[in-house]
Image 1 (cartoon, rainbow, N blue to C red):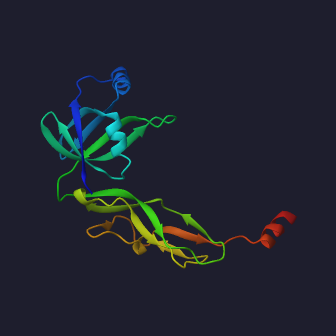
Image 2: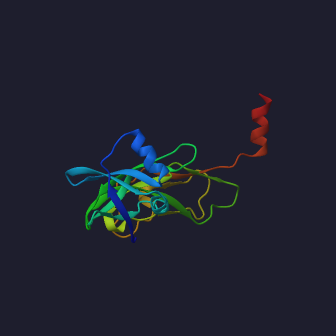
Image 3: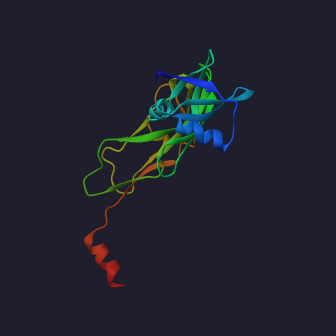
Length: 190
């Protein structure tokens, strides 16, 4: 994963009024914290942040008044109706440091014939990986699975250097049998 470089400006004003003015000006209020240091309140370019956050667990290189900080998004607040960024919490990381993040679960292959349905019990899986090599997703193979089969966390293929941060017996995906017309008719006669 490559780093996304974003300029940041330290903010000295706080409160709803300032945050509203910053968002109108295309900026996003954010806080950078971690490694025992004092939190640093910054504003970031809204469009650049929105584009960067399209990649799950993106590694950001912030230029904060001449010094560079590597950070990952820890919490992102969006407007409930319009979806624009309201506030971002960023965690400082170091090269070689292991961090725990949630990554999306993607599927590979096709289920066995018969009209079975795939239920995602977990849409994301919690893993531990080096901060500069965070996976964008993990892949679960569902090829040939039939009704009643499950994919456990330990069955999901993880990239090199990535380990599970959840119990390996946690169910991630489950295959449900398709209902037949006869079963549906029985249910309506009662």
